[in-house]
Length: 322
Image (cartoon, rainbow, N blue to C red; front, side, top):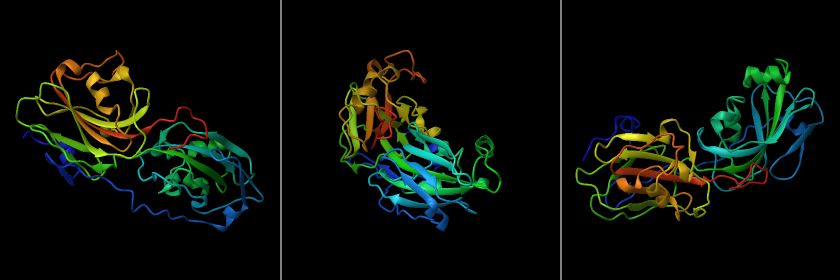
């Protein structure tokens, strides 16, 4: 066996996938939603269709620390990670004047991007699920100073946020582990957050395409036209070295045929959301199909572990759900 890449080993590995056994991964079963309400939130009147709320205040809203409560609870995939992709409808008011500062659906975006403007929004969204409607209030000190200045908030003012959680993608594959058979199948190890490491057998690679489902998700099936959102790691068979990994910067990608090889595309088509797939791609199927690939793979046989996290909404409309 070749050595586990050092970057993966440092993370602390918790599961080992040998031939005949697939890795486990992070679970959301223990994600319990806890709110931090304040009496001033009762001053916020929320209306609007599901997906994009509208709001007004009957009196000025002030809080000394971020407060939040649920007007509606959702179901499905919970928000558990700052790197998790989600799409929300959000309305922001000046709590002092009641003026609407923002009212729009977001694009599919990682939670930590939203935290750049509202550093405590992660607390308000922790363990929230699609379909949730949340009302929150944040003092100016808990908001990015640039936003405070642009919005004209005074130092003593608070912002009121009303959030509809429309789409939440998985942080990592969460499907049922599958039995994996066959000789010379690479071994997969997982960090606690689901980051995979791949150990390549010290043997000649298979001659054809090999696809193994390590975890079987229960979500929507991926078709040729699906805009599947993925995390993946790729290693070269002959060296065992990582040549490409979305996990390194924590940013999932949307599958596009012109950015991936034929072997990669065939591995995900027909799979389901929540699945994790191991694919060994021979050199004749490893070339990227178009000219827009960000990372041209090395020559020779390649090995990928692919997590299928969800499917991008077809539009950024406030009714998009997952």
